[in-house]
Image (cartoon, protein in one colour):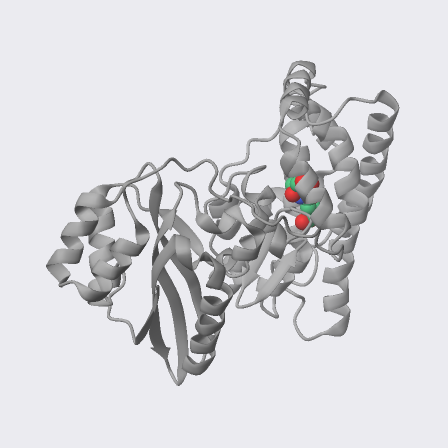
Length: 393
Ligand SMILES: N[C@@H](CCC(=O)N[C@@H](CS)C(=O)NCC(=O)O)C(=O)O
């Protein structure tokens, strides 16, 4: 996020719950190891913070045009990843209760970091930043890796021998682009020690966690090409859904053949939120062509064939022109069986849903309004008319 702030790349962080979002089938489809940070943009999917930060950087952050400077930036990034991060985790994680404390390992890590800091302190003797005269990805990568050390364990005494490193660190974290991402950082006063209590609590939590997601994740990670087990003749994907008086086919007919007023009334009276739900999905804007987004939508509708009995949807395509380029957004409102997102019930249904951000429409008023916009007026939530639409019925 700091690199993006420097380069002016527009990167946003969606709603995310660690342990939940990154273990969902949608996430695992795109990022099979379930790890964060994870980045997606216009069909580019990246894990690994170094790769992501390089992708969102501009040339200046990567060291400019000089090959030696670029290599120096890369050197500090690799140095951070292989020399700093492992020892920092070994020392700091037990103080946060994340891992068990091991005296010997912690001492080794402290000594290794002392050596690394001595080298860095020397590098920074006459320099404000690590490479060249301005902030580069070298500073961003190293400084952010050091934050947990400076906050948790590097007390005054430990810091005392590394004046140049401290000065550089403070310069970095006080740059506006660092500050707006990291906030205020309070340097450690007392070296934190193993947090036994929190460790025990966290252990308890992981031990009692249902193993189902873990298993699913392991399978995706280790056996991506394993052949699908033969499908059961009949799987009830809606076993949890109570019987309901809302009949999708009736609604579809009413929508197709009745007047606007009749079908609106039918929905208002019959829709049953104990067994059905309405969702708004948006596939983030991408630079493409009208025919490409159109054929993507056709493909999506074909792939959703088997879910037709349980879902009705309206898809809209919007275009925003920027110079000669079109930027297209695909969005939809769906009415589906069950109170959870229908695509999560069967892996075969989630091929495309993964690329959309979904929000459940919770209230009757909001449902009515969105339905009016999508199904009757062909406009999106903001009231903007679509260039084209597809009714999935
Ligand atoms: N080298 C990776 C490390 C990624 C990583 O280990 N992420 C942790 C969170 S800090 C994670 O997602 N763990 C989830 C898991 O392993 O299930 C990077 O820099 O991005």
